[in-house]
Length: 142
Figure 1 (cartoon, rainbow, N blue to C red):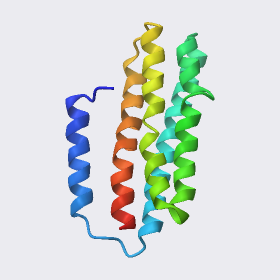
Figure 2: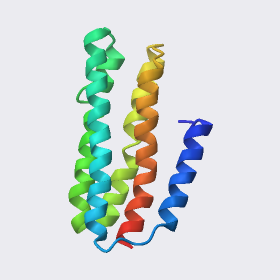
Figure 3: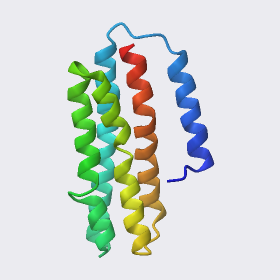
Figure 4: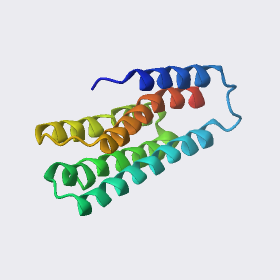
């Protein structure tokens, strides 16, 4: 999936800020909070898509909103939160691969020739959060 220029710039800015911030005293607690915020955004995205399913009859939107795709986003962030305590490397991996789910949603929409900028914005946001999460986890568990 291609990042748009604003997303690339935002990712770069986030990485710079993460790299320059001091290490928190309770790194794992901050890591859980950070993943928890991303989990919340994933749930918001899923709820948004479920609302669209009711408004628009589209198999691709239903696929994105329901069990197949955005449940993977939500569950991925939940698993990363649990793993952060015992296995930060696995939490890092799980948070990073969450971006596969929005990419699958975008492909389903493209296959159906459904263009919805709001859905793409949600998918891009989750992709960005998934891209930043491993760097943040590395920073707070170092």
